[in-house]
Amino acid sequence: MYSTGIIKTVWRGPPAFRSLEALKVPEIVNMVMSFLESDGDLFNSSLVCKTWSHVALNKLWRSLTSVVPLFMLLGEMGMHDWDRSSLFFTDAILAADWTQFEHYSRKVRRIANEHCTQDVEPGALILVINNRPSSIPYILPRLTEIEWIEDPHRPNSRLLHLVPLMSPTLTTFDLTIDGEDSRSVTDARVVLRHLALLPVLKLQHFRTNWLDSSKWLTAAVCKVLRCQSESLQSFAYQVFDLDEPLVRSVSQLPNLVDLQLKFSGIGHHTNEEFHDFNETLAAHCPGLQEIRFCVTFGPRDFGFYYFRPLTKLEGLKKICLECPDMELLEKDFVLMGEGWRSLVSLELPQSWIPLSWFATIAEHFPPTLEEIDVEITVEEDLDSECAIPKPFTDLQRISCLRIAKPQALPGIGAIMKRLVTPKTTVECAMWMVQLFQDVTGNSVRWKGVWEAERNLRSSSLESISV
Image (cartoon, rainbow, N blue to C red; front, side, top):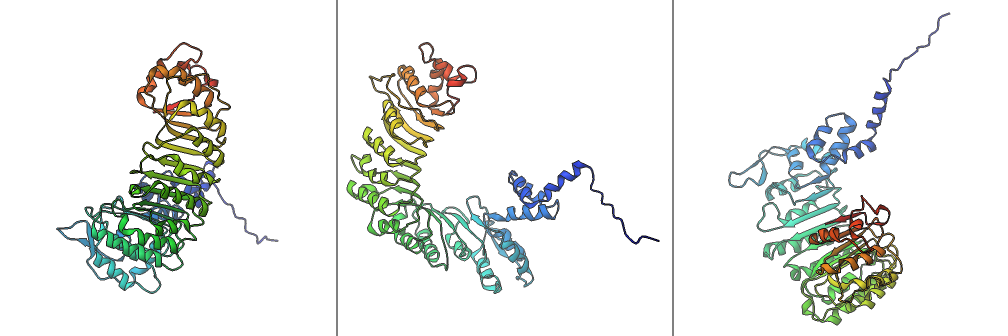
């Protein structure tokens, strides 16, 4: 009898070759390509095999500085001798070209023009809009993020070019207008109006930097806030006037998590109006986790009292209050510590506090604190034996130790060593580093503290960042 069975032998190669099978898994390839630094490396990777090509092309097309690469799929493009920054179509767009255009347009997730050197002419943009097939309702149907800088002195930054690129999938809109050019302000109104009216849009991050134009665009911004009140999670804005529409619009963002405001015109208002704004914010946005306020021209006698309503935000994790010469009292830190029980980062740049107040901070602040950024002064009668109730066990960074009295360094060392742990990074002024290293004698052994790798390894600071 004869067997009709067929025996197949599959050669899988030596173990070294079998281990390379992992590089055919898209998730692993994606992780590997995340370490590539240039588009050229991604392009070369796209030529390896089908799996690598798919992953590499997705990364290459994910973020664009302009739509020029996408429009080039539709036909030949050229430029004028007198303007080599704008491109136009030299031939008619053929129906067959739209298939490739549609395929790659779905890969684009982000448009950011910061490094843009070439863009399309308005005529080319209009040609694409008017001739696209019905299967392409949006030029970039899966766009989620826009970062745009509008500068009248910079080519290829015309804000109106954004309008046809927007789609309902947009979640992040970051816009900077440099200057007070009337054309830029007019364009911004059109873009914001279009943004507010996009169907089924669920904008999550709305960040703007108007510089000198904020007073002309507040109404348009408030309209976007009202239309996107249910979905917005972060908002950044340069406030010129604390007028009622803006306060009301911000207070109607129940899911707001991150708020960044630069008060460039707060001097036109009284301290109490600023206090009332913070009171409204704390009452209507209880989910806030990160706040960054910068007051460039504040009222006179501006103190932490006007920020005290924010201590009602129990879930706050990060706060930065950048206010020149803001008056701080020791009891303010008691209120901060008792109110912000989840605080991770406290930044008070340009606000000076005595070093001895760190005893109060250590007593009242939660153990979750990882970063402190303040300016420290040293009292004439500094007590290096002042009680530190407990060290910051999770503290990773203390920044801005700018102390102008070298003779106080040993006392500072005694306090700091009881305050922090070996893993804490201390950032100080450059001139202080050598002084710290040269301090010898006494029981503190500051030289040993700063030379952590050579001695006092177990009880010293691990590093200094300058």
